[in-house]
Image (tube, rainbow, N blue to C red):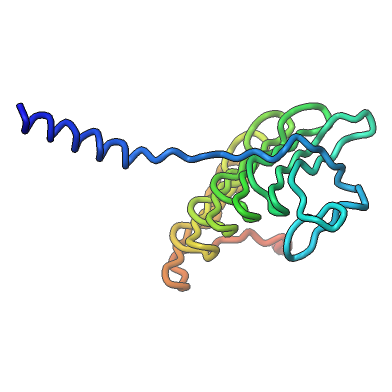
Length: 188
């Protein structure tokens, strides 16, 4: 029975350690317009009346409809930034950590289809980056490791025809880059 209790404790201990909980801190519910002259940005972040700003920088239309909301804590972008088209449809979602884009960046076309799905780590492209046409067909898929192209890179035209297909490994390109000339050829 004692062995069973020790095994149960170890299982709970290791299970609890592998499920780390992330604490999310939200900025205070203070909204400052992006064109407020008291809000300044420099290489150290955002300052309001000369002090590090904590709150939301917002942008809105003439009708006061908010189209962009950026969370800022102690002068740095922190949290989920959101933007909407002036018609109300969601435009983008991007997460910031200590002033740098982190994780998945999503942007939509006005029709609700994805436009971009990018991945970031410490403010740099990292992982698969995808660009879509408005009809949701894939336009480009590229792969990055800490800001540098690495791995399979592909591009399609609007009909779905693959136009480039290559791999970058250790800064060397392998494969075919096919670009259709925009200059007509003469036939006699």
